[in-house]
Length: 178
Image 1 (spheres, rainbow, N blue to C red):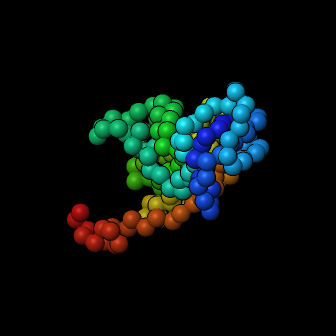
Image 2 (image 1 turned 45 degrees about the vertical axis):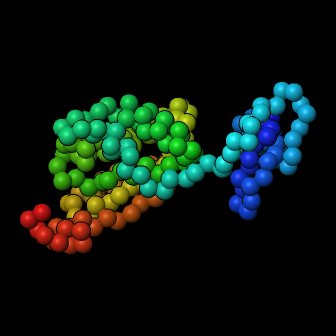
Image 3 (image 1 turned 30 degrees about the vertical axis):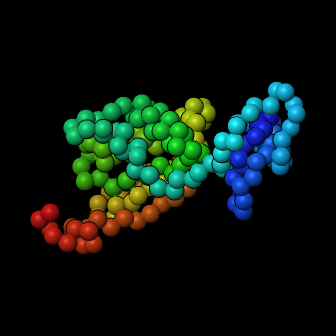
């Protein structure tokens, strides 16, 4: 693929140029234009590097789109992936809150495991538009967080783990009743 007349955004500057793509990889970027008739004319549209999303809870929004509704895990991943790709995100760290306050629902152990399995299956089969990695949000106020972490810590797509403190009476939850 040859792209011409694109406004190319680099770390240091923006310039109009030509991009040559071969086997899905950029192999050459040049200033100015080309006379190759097969080149795709971008008419001055911007060509940006892919964006990286380091933390998103967006998957959870697709898993539970309305109160009391729990969506199919695979369908939620497909929708989530399409949305991040449409926003120009090429690499995404999908946050998965681990540690259960109950064994059912969005934050239940079954859902956590299903999400990790779906992510691995879709990635292995190259069915996602963006590159997805697993980001574990370890809820330290839950009794089983270490056990759940131990079950997921060898996941091949795990790249980030954070300790989250949502202990009642602490930080954002000053009012224990709330």
